[in-house]
Image 1 (cartoon, rainbow, N blue to C red):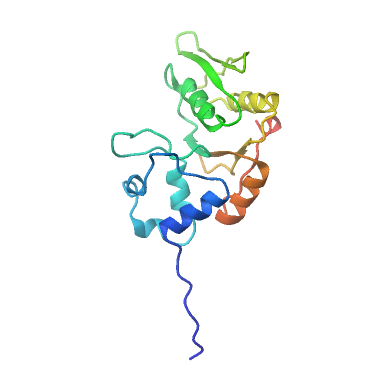
Image 2 (cartoon, one colour; image 1 turned 90 degrees about the vertical axis):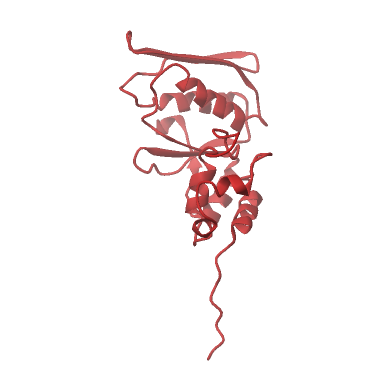
Length: 201
């Protein structure tokens, strides 16, 4: 009678374009086909960005590049994730990728020794050595490690900061963006990201 038109949901491609406009970009080589290996197009195109953000902050699940990250801006992990050598190094490698436009992290080394209940992580950034001895508490991730990367970003005068959404159970959602990008991202998606500081850890 009144000619009201029902608002249609955004397509997957439209959502990706809007995310790109606020700074979240698919890495070269990543594809919609890979995204569809995790969820159907219909699920991605339901109202909101929840499903798409969940997948973009995770790893590719299918194909020869399974295990690769979708973007350099989003990252999520389960806090019960420390089991062996290499687990903390993977975090450093991921942050090296996320900050690669700002500074270079190299010479990454770690160790998780359950017999002595000790762990360490070390790396080099722009000629400066960084190291931390994370606390081993069963398989829980030590959040002080995030503090080390916050320190690095401050030391390097990075425009981009580590942002964090309100934790969902054991799942932590992080981003690396400028504060203005974080604000625009939060407004677009409804997932509220705020700059993480060492006082939060």
